[in-house]
Image 1: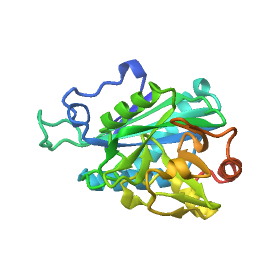
Image 2: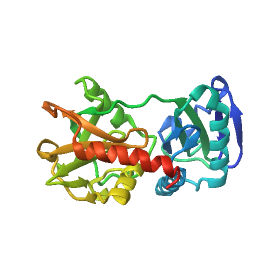
Image 3: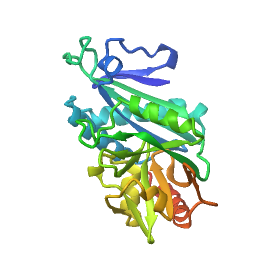
Length: 278
């Protein structure tokens, strides 16, 4: 079941009956924002932080502010309705677009469209692999830091990584600094310090990234792209991966997951189990 409506009203409908206008600006020009949450044992993780970021992304695009109360109620309905088929681990997505508009970049005056969907999710393996890509993230883009539905760049980068046997692509920015993955933030361990690129690099302010900084004292630092090859350890973070150690980047391999990343992974899982909305 999917919750489908606008900023103010909506209802649960079967997935094959969920209809959005082909004139919706989210469809025609990817004019929208979204959030993806992990749902563990029927409970959404860090929902408040995700809703805050949704509001920030909406404001950055000039969209009418989403109604947090409407979304919270809808999230509860979707989780309850899908619980029998989702099991213990699910992925929930909140999509918020500009609504129906003319065919072009100009927006209309429609109320934004709101869709909340959920699917069964599988646990990630203990460690993962990455590939660097020949494209860069533009840290000066007007949508830098916005979790926009405009994901074509990420689709292409991820396809490139998959073609090289990796699960994620990692990008530099235009200054050849380490930036982010297609759906992840990147951390490196250097001289015993846990480091991640600052928001000024053009990376998304990831929720799991934010928690790793708060909970474990990781530091923001501008890093060259080559840090991936010099680091003692590398790991990714995302709302579905949590802390995910990297065992291969391009031709560089580690024999096993790094001790720091493995420890943080275990501690993150333990802390998130105690507090579902930190």
